[in-house]
Image: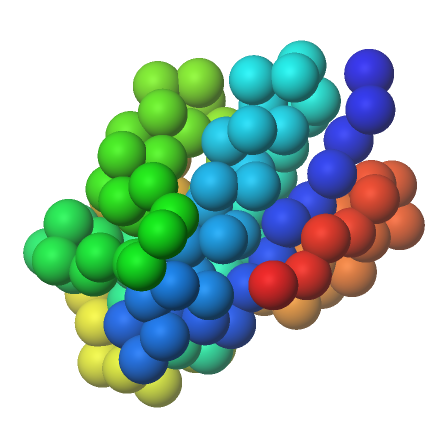
Length: 118
């Protein structure tokens, strides 16, 4: 099975760019591709259960809508631990299926999957 790793640094500061990564991941999953979504920098805020539903992109599907689909499909959503910790965010506030991971995990993913950046 084909594998992709979609990663983004875009979050609440640019909802439309952030939404593209989630939309791409959802469409890829619908096409039967194994998907991992990795969030860095500003994007880690979208893995906080109190944030994603408040961020509305222009033109893209709502982030919460695509996020719900990814969660229903058990897509791995990895969140840069260093980025999340720098935002003083609590691990207990992560959305379903989100896991804090280090750069070593991202490097390993990029060795075995096609990498898509937003």
